[in-house]
Amino acid sequence: MKIKPLGERVLLKRIEEDEQVRGGIIIPDSAKEKSQEAEVVALGTGKKDDDGKVIPFNVKKGDRVLLPPYGGNPVKVDGVEYILIDEESILGVIA
Image 1 (tube, one colour):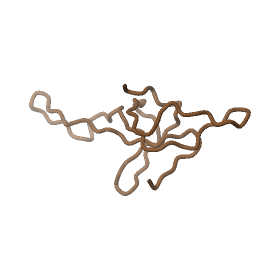
Image 2: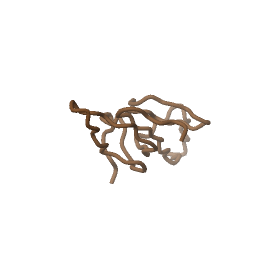
Image 3: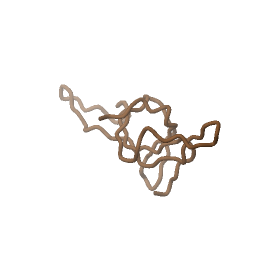
Image 4: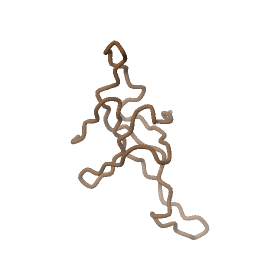
């Protein structure tokens, strides 16, 4: 991996939904909403509490998570788009 998040940040890769045709109409990519599901690719170094102890992450590499519709910072590396987001902005883990 060429990107190593720092602090409490998490690197995610959006999980693309299959193209659906409704009523015979194909919706162009520019009009589609982005998927709110992503996979955890890498974790940062962790947030520290007041005593300097590292607080463990609630997610781990490989977890599928839910994102807010417009959360995170998009990052493109080698043609692949990732999202860099603070762990606290992740809405939940998909079981």
